[in-house]
Image (cartoon, rainbow, N blue to C red):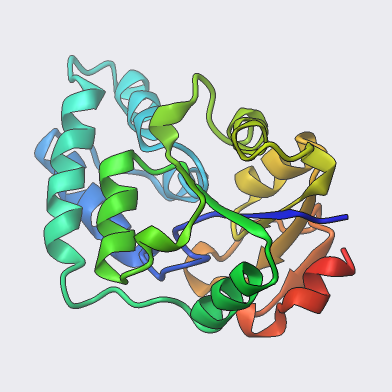
Length: 215
């Protein structure tokens, strides 16, 4: 029986992928990195630090990826002001889950600074029982570690958790953790393979408490 719902952030709770990509491209260009189309497709659902390390190593550059992440976080926080809103169905779903005593968490691959900036901008940060960022784990998605850590901290068995994701890496992480996975189609993560999810929806307007209970 599902007792906890673990939300990805970007592309699930907020439509921040375009802004995140804008910030990344500007910071990477300053470091002499222009991502290939293949590299852009690989970033979704994965930790920023891992994406930057991969791009730097592929080019043999002497650049500190941690410094690039800090710069991106600062730029992202500026770019989202007045631009970020909760996605369709998000606020109602969170309200209904809380009123029905489900535990809810954010489990994001983004750094904590960026997670907090996004949630504060849309006034949702205080709604969650737990917030886990990409900084919290040794391994990021598609490894199951982030979701398993969330279940442990919520004191819920992995099989009693539902994951809501929009990217292939997150879906694979949720399934590897032994959890039910709901995939949300997002126009900004096009090309992602959602087929391993238990259910695929077009928006969180389709998801309610009964939907979660039937998983």
